[in-house]
Amino acid sequence: MRILVTGTAGFVGAALTERLLARGDEVLGIDNHNDYYDPSLKEARLARFASHPNYTHLRADLADAAAVNRAFEEFKPQRVVNLAAQAGVRYSLKNPQVYVQSNLVGFVNVLEACRHGNVEHLVYASSSSVYGANRKLPFAVEDAVDHPVSLYAATKKANELMAHTYSHLYGLPTTGLRFFTVYGPWGRPDMSPILFADRIVRGEAIDVFNYGNHSRDFTYIDDIVEGVIRTLDHVARPDPAYDPLLPNTGTSNAPYRVYNIGNDQPVQLMRFIELLEQNLGRTVEKRLLPMQPGDVPDTWADVSALRRDVGYAPNTSIEVGVKRFAEWYRDYHHVES
Image (tube, rainbow, N blue to C red; front, side, top):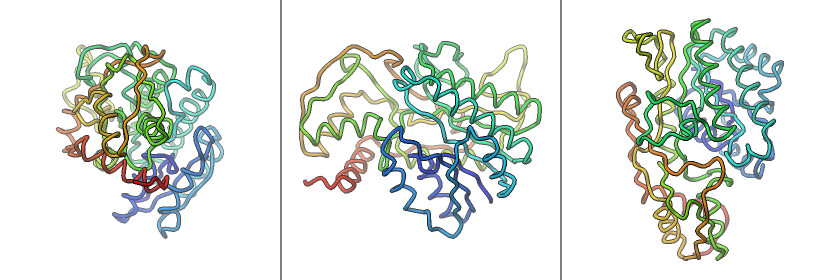
């Protein structure tokens, strides 16, 4: 297939693109290479597949409607995976306008291009952050998500609403995936695994928020990519059982779906740090601090809907995943044993 992927210099986007190319798809990647974190990591990710004969790269911003429309008109994608977004909960407290341009303006440009390009299926990244102040665990797609606690989370909830509008009005099949704490080789340096690893290697104390009582549904990158591909291949359809008197927030009478994509195995943050220390061969001091604004205490994905519909079955244990991550980290950063 011809598949357009946005955010191909990003963590999930690069891993997904490698898999799509390996199975024979033709991919057009779009990324703006912004400097939210070290662009050299983005270039290193791209270098793994940039010369592949079935890959074309476009350096552009999704907020540039003309560039997006031109890319769609020239490439004529059959399916689209939108992973490009301004990520990060804490950064959204300081730079809200960036989130509006990337996550809202950029997303509506993608929706418009999909609509006019007769795209067969749009899969897009949402986030576990949409569950916000919810405390019922595990988080299920049937739960209400009306109390976001960061602007980042609000933009992701908005993406789901925008997608439903296009599914309803124009019959555009859309599927949103609520990602739960993705980690692994080539991960984002603003996320806890690399932040922790950096400090462990330097022998510096780690700041552990919520006094170490956080738990996260850490999900290994290979499991995430497998779920994205299975979802991409399973085009959203109207739910024949949808009841507008008792609406299910994960489905619709339009070709629309929302799923959780996680490991369904929450891990205490202190356990994750302990595994990192073991695999990096050092221990460091932990500074226990209060919870930060915009954070939530726990995440846990109910992935039963994704299991049922596409056969999603994450199978990378936290022990195996952290070991692989630490091996990559040592190699990429030239850390001695």
